[in-house]
Amino acid sequence: MRGLRRAEIALWVTGALLLGGALVTIVESRVYQARQGRAFSDRERMASAPPGSAPASARDVDPLVLGRIEIPRVGVSAIVREGDDARTLSIAVGHIPGTARPGEPGNVALAGHRDSFFRALRNIRAGDVIRLRVPGRGDEYRVDSTEVVGAGETRVLASTREAVLTLVTCYPFGWIGHAPRRFIVHARLFRAPP
Image 1 (cartoon, rainbow, N blue to C red):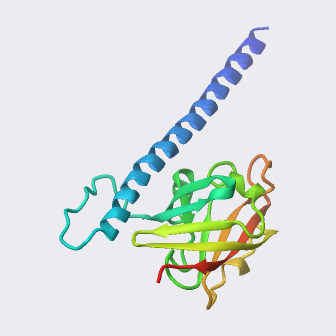
Image 2 (image 1 turned 180 degrees about the horizontal axis):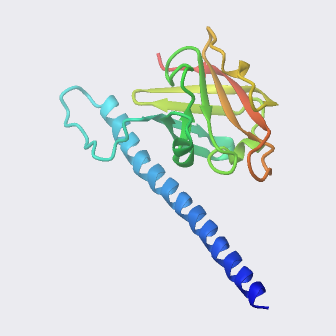
Image 3 (image 1 turned 30 degrees about the vertical axis):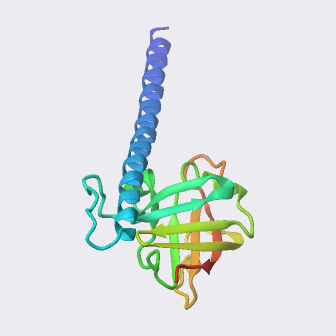
């Protein structure tokens, strides 16, 4: 009986620690998104301000922040940060190194977790508009197609001559643990600033 009681206590403690860790990650992500969202908006205002006007404060700016992605129809709005490491993907959508940077021609590839920022990609469809904003520039892409590939598939990250956007997240969406495949969204630039 004493062994069962110890096992029960151990399971309660383990559950509390896991729940606490998840809560800390969620709070950290939301605080980061709010803070960097404000800083990014300030950077956008600075980029569009007339020359000689007073600059906005840059106290909260993360130098790795590249821009913001928005997919209005499915409700995605998130800061995009350089990198695809675990830390970056826990607080932002990550720009996959080696692909074109947002605002540049070529294949811009972004990654996000299927259970956070890219959860809504399960509802994306051809024709949806994706906005990718960097300070002083806002590009709009239209979704061409989606596909599911193996976890090691890299052809979707290949460079291109035309301006395209590739979104990558794990698949299946409801999978528990490390998912065996990747869900890919292919979009093509259709509106860029002059």
